[in-house]
Length: 177
Image (cartoon, rainbow, N blue to C red; front, top):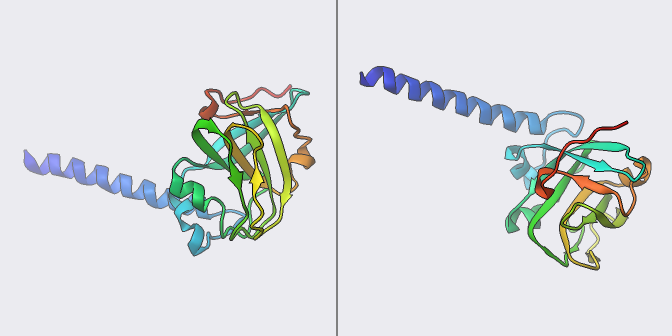
């Protein structure tokens, strides 16, 4: 009786290890290339969908990492040298608060979008300068910060007043007409 039970556990463990290995590989693959050592923690983070709905009801889909802890907030997209055009990171805070970002050890320009608890974009800082230590503040309390590749917001016509849709805001998905 112990041997079959042990075999099931072994098979489950093997499947789990295979999933973890595959997840690490898939986050590292694609146009953006391998993750540098400083960003290796992202290898084990899932990529989730996020949508931005413009006031014209147009949907823009992104595939993003989500930072939820203080350690993840401090690392962010540091050391990333390429980001796919639909890639990014959502800094998902548990409470609304004023926040300030910077571009320390960030090698690519980023659009930084600040969103309130409903997901409404209240501020966009376009093309933040790589490696800058200048603080980019929200200007008011926000529930999340979304970093996208520099120029992504302008290229898609994303503006203040548009809405971010993601499970963090209690919504997700989008129907583009």
